[in-house]
Length: 198
Image (tube, rainbow, N blue to C red; front, side, top):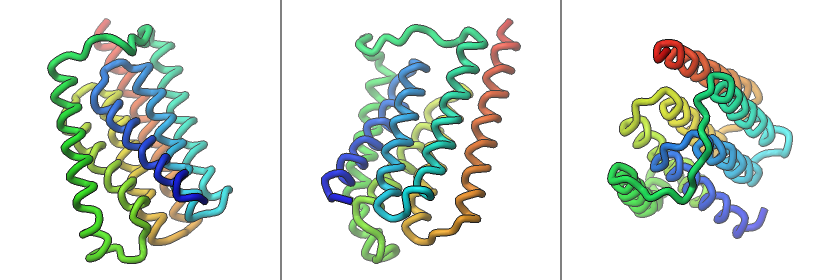
């Protein structure tokens, strides 16, 4: 796999994670989550076979579609407004996300040298960046959908980091089950929140 494609995949993962951190429009967030899974797939493709890299992509897209259908079924999905003026909270989250990305970019060479010497720089950058941005999202948002997106993103980042260290079909199955469980838990909490609102 070419170096340019790996760099573009890391940029895609960062952009999608920052969009999920900043925007509060569920349609845009779910599209960003699906694109994030595509970026993670491309990064995993640099280390694994096509079949093993496709499993997290299919599970992630399936969970994104499940969340999307749940939002449509509960009538919570509104028409996205991508060019709506940002609120002060969105500006704050964007600045916090950019500071996190800069911190991760500066920290990755040290982490690679001291902890993960055999892991590729861009793969490490993508995984640690995704983990850091998803933890930031989990700390800044309280709505069930954003918490589930943050947990799914964290698990994707951790899975990407673990793929660089070890390849195991059994572990891949465990990650798939965890993703499915988190997604279905998110569906439950979305339906429950809608029922409580009525």
